[in-house]
Length: 189
Image (cartoon, rainbow, N blue to C red; front, side, top):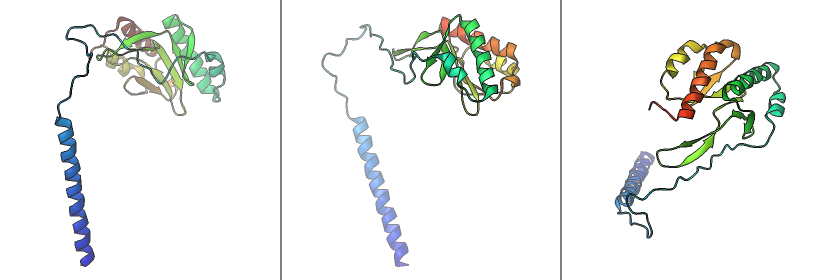
């Protein structure tokens, strides 16, 4: 019985400590923020700052990377996707980081004004899936995906277990639409 009361006391004191921390955070959040000296005046144009992305274009050989894929089926699928993306972008394959093959490039800009460079179309052979990087948020994307075949999606990724599970004509339409919208900078968000 004494142990139970002691445990209840600890719980009570733990609650008080948590409440104290919350009130301290709240007080900190409501403090007025002072302006720094030399800040820009209203209406002054803000310089666009390039974002330093974790994944950068490299000088590694995309051909050597594709040839090094151990699974023969995955290697053939990747080469087929590379051929398709090269045709659609008109650009040679370039490595982005250690395992992404990208084609072409464009500069994107966030609402905050930060900007960065990324590839127009790209893919990465992963352990469980062939991951294609295609733009999300453009009109017609969902309708195209419904006709594609067996796949999963992420925010801007398309995951395919096997290339044979999808309609290649529809995949080409999806990639071409993604490239077109990236070039135009049009998102339906």
